[in-house]
Image (cartoon, rainbow over all chains, first blue to last red; front, side):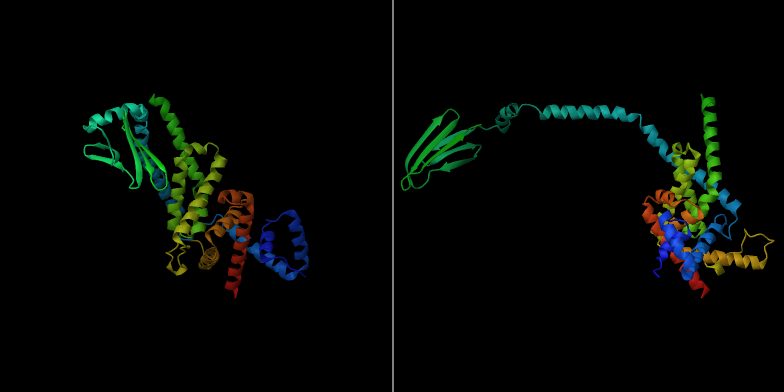
Amino acid sequence: MKHPAETALALYAGGDLGWWTRLGIGRHVRQCGPCRRQVEEFRTVCEMLQAEREKLPPNLEWSEAAAAMRANIRLGIAAGECVAEPERMRSPWRPALALPVLLLIVAGWILQSLPPAAKRASAPERAGGALVLDASPAGIGVERDGRGFQLLRPAAAESVEVSVRGDSVRSRYVDSETGQVTISHVYAE
Amino acid sequence: MSEAVEPVLEDSLARQNRFISENLRRIFLLVYRMVGNVADAQDLTQEVFVKALQRRDQLKDEEKAAHWLSRIATNTAIDFLRRHGRLAFCELDDMPEQAGSSPLESPEARVLRAEREAILEGGLATLTARERAALLLRDVEGLPAEEVARHMACSKATVRSHIANARVKFRRYLSRRKT
């Protein structure tokens, strides 16, 4: 005979099974002595716990304990309200603070969205030095306040053309060995 | 204006006091069975009521409020047991003279009561926090498994598993005591 699991008997004893499972286990329990004993023991556990429902701990004077708890609960609620009060008082200032913050954000956005050209135009003025384009047989480059760069003529270049147009300088080299043409352009901005 | 506010405050205070009086013993016993110690049960019971009454707008429906309070109590006790690891039952020999016992109670009855209490506490001490909560809500509070599942924020299957395991452990504890 196959016995139900101990946990199934525990649930059966407390009436915690679905009706179909309960029916099957009930039929088995009626025929099986050891399982019936187990169910009775589980029922004893349930009854024992139910019997303790209203029983207070043996060493407790309930009226005194209840009075102390009531007093502490009121104290706890009052303390909670004291802590919560400043929060509530601060809250009307929140909209007033929000307005300057909003204005700052809008001002920042406006400054950020200024046309980039306007910012660039002012840059050479702030730097204080003029921009110099440099073109020579050695190469072309750009320089301001002693700082800049130069694109040097390759050693194997046979033919060299250098020209200046407005705010740009251009060089054209032809490699004597490979015939490769290199054109470089430097713009002043 | 204060005349209009005062009756509202009085009404609210009276409702709050009634709510505490009606539920204090039940919640204390539930927490005590879970933590197994009077001092901790008193502290936790107070914590449960403070938590509940700080959100008193949820107390309009008194029946729902009582269920909600049990749920707060269960979770507070489970959290406490998780933090502290295990039950803190005091030894019977260490118990102070039983102030709450009736002077008419015979020495035999007192011994029997202490014995019953020791069995119950010993059995509950063998369970995990969640098994204990499930067993107490089902067998002591008499809630159906669906309601226990709602209290413990888990599925009905999980709750049934906790209840079954708890009853098995408790039965084995009783068998060990007999032998």
